[in-house]
Image (cartoon, rainbow, N blue to C red):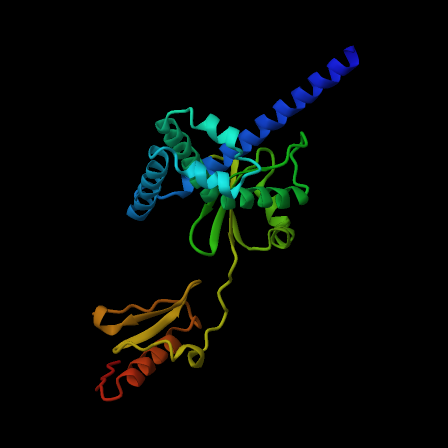
Length: 273
């Protein structure tokens, strides 16, 4: 009898531990969602308030949503279960589903960020970087700078910057991202790793982008990670082209003139040297 009781208590203890772990993961993911959601966005508040209004309408009116659950999921929402739930005040139903939907929204927003952090941490662990006590660096935050670039903030006590530099190629292979650089943060315990999923081309041919430039009096400046950048001469009363010897100043100036002449063939242009 004592063995059965011990086994039962151990199962309960494991269940409670696993439940606490699951709740902690949910809270962690929701905390990522809190950081991701733009609470200043009007679209977010229109969606959120609209959702709460819908929940209010289906709960306050005799909890009509329970009838739908009864027909859709009869195995779970049996008649006895529905009757039991109807004993609660409709406002309590509204509070429950309002809280549940709020948690769910933050969970959805934070899930991608959470999984990305876990994935990057696992990849970082694979490199075998450790300090003298055998402690591995920990990613504490991932900042998304734009569509392609991210900054990894790594707690790196006892692991110097040079060790990351030595492992750059391994880190790129592991993260499947291009590492643009490493930097010691203002707090010396942290290392900042700048990564990107897209690399700029080393040479941008004029013939490849000439069709993109369609605006009058405009010319091609170059290419960013997201698009080809053009500029109108009307917005530039003065233009400074700077660079080292052999850096391409003359080539850029010539292609700029060619752009302007091709876009406006009847324009008169004077060049003073």
